[in-house]
Image (cartoon, rainbow, N blue to C red; front, top):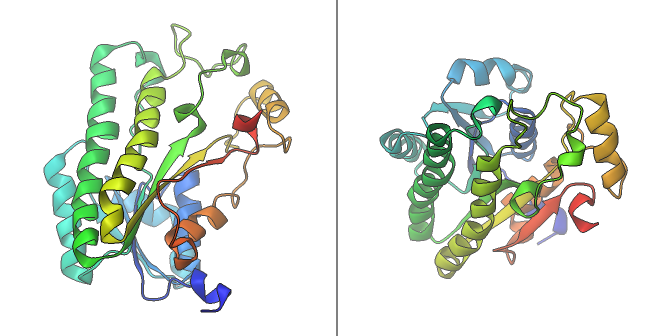
Length: 263
């Protein structure tokens, strides 16, 4: 097979959770540009349709599905709905994340809600799609992690900004569930590998999203490339992990952070 053909996703069915954000848009764009039919699943179908309208106008094969990451029945129903329409799913991207209010990071109820969505929800959706992929004998699951899942907090980046909670905390729940996602990726890779299903995790960091100037300057100084991630930096890695170009890669934890975690 020609190397460029390995990246072709024509005929592939992809499902991404949470496609309206800056990371999500890049993921949808990359998969659609490579030829996949992309189902974008979230709570708000209308919001996704509006956010992705430019891609839809370009006649990319983008579809929408509704589900609630906090509701197990909703997750299973969404999976059933897509399989009923397509009879297969080749690619699952676990991108959706519930972010509790920054002022609630030390609240037990908010932490519990975060775990229900971001830990239990991840377990349910990965099993729902992973089991069917295993039965078919192929598939790629891509978990969207964070450098906060492999490193401790650096409060210096946030000092003097409004990015911390009212009690001065970083999002402890985020560190917890992204750290769990990292090792759960290895577990899933081991569990499903014998059935031809690959599971990898992209540990992302530093996407520019109009953060305070002080934070941006400090973060850039911490990276080897001296900048934050832009609106296309994620696309290449996603395509690689989704495509046949990575058929021998599974259980990989891949930092994509400009070298931040390598210092």
